Length: 248
Image (cartoon, rainbow, N blue to C red; front, side, top):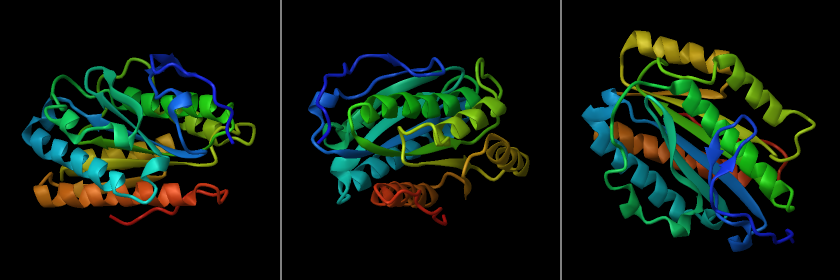
């Protein structure tokens, strides 16, 4: 059994300097967890589909709450626009009310894609270190959802992101059994999709998924894809390997 020690739910600073919060370890009831981070673009361009995107996030939450592995999932939601910020820290699904997501997307500003991606990865690195030090088994899956190109990051670069993923996966890092990283592109602009395809490859992200226009049907399909990817990752915990990429 894990050693039960109290970790404050307040703000923590991850290895690369990004801040995050997480549920106190003395409140956790399982011995293994999949850490899930959804980094959502909330720049001005998202305004045309922010209501639909909120519904998508709710559907992701609802599907995960119904999963047989729901008690083994800890979810963190962050946004990135001109800056990057946490909407809520790592929390047990049972402690998240879907109504909290009403009006949660407030489109504004530019697109700090690199900082948002690095924030997500850094929080997984930092929180998994806390859990692993207390004998919890962990793996992780990170989703970055965007409809645009990087234009405002102040800290991160593609090389920093690639290095962070390599560091998390290094043999000397025993905090995470595995990590899966998925970039989701919203829209049909060929130049933006080409840019995101290059970003995925240059940053060393595992998968790039193009969903097309942000129609209710497409976003419902995205919610299903994300929830199934989370479930697959959680089911792989303890096997020593990562889950396979799913097809959108």
